[in-house]
Image (spheres, rainbow, N blue to C red):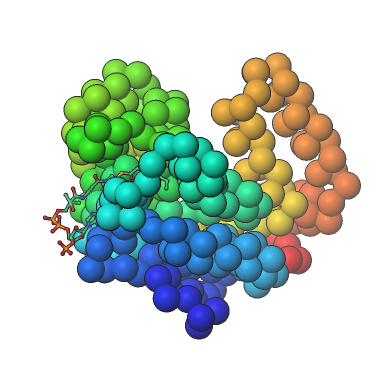
Length: 257
Ligand code: CO8
């Protein structure tokens, strides 16, 4: 773990915390950082002590986008042949819940990275935007799709076409973030969320994440079918027995991890 140069990696309670750590470049997401992030995500996904993963940045920036210095020299069709965006999608393969704890700038690829996570928790200082248009580009890691699904065409189109940033309050109203918290409470709130998840039945958590994510991929009928199969299969878990018994016995459930 200590071999990483651009991220910090620690555990707190049931949370595996990954901190993007290139402060001088406002956590611009370069290839080396994305490789480290993918590695850390896979390790935490495999670590039985981790119930949920938190991806966070600094007070000033979650991430100010893909590294423009690195991208500047790229040319087509080499870009197509190496598809340097593909490693960014590592976070989509994580089975445990991933919480983006966002303070400061979440721009371009930084906003896209946050939207690939399962839950966005925002500090009051958070600023979201897709400013690629100012570089003669469009979003390239899902921004045009995920932002539109999250906040609707009206605001997404304005943001993608003009590069306007959205503050935390507006982002919450628009449905981009789950909750806004004071900046100094951001990490503690994210850890609390991870600990809450850590106290639940792991198969139920994994299936709940898969079911909600399926809502973005499947037609309603198929999504409901998937949910039904998951719901019915959870009757085969210890978690269901413990959760229902505890309710009826008026005690707190104790789920084994
Ligand atoms: N890439 C590289 N360096 C960056 C980036 C970036 N995205 N953002 C900031 N930096 C660097 C600056 O160059 C500066 O470095 P230096 O001190 O060496 O000059 C340092 O970080 C501090 O930045 P500023 O001096 O600009 O700080 P300010 O507080 O004045 O401004 C801003 C902060 C508004 C965030 C400003 O830095 C900015 O506009 N940054 C660029 C934002 C942007 O355009 N992001 C989108 C990038 S494109 C993208 O993300 C496409 C993703 C598609 C998927 C890609 C897959 C690989």
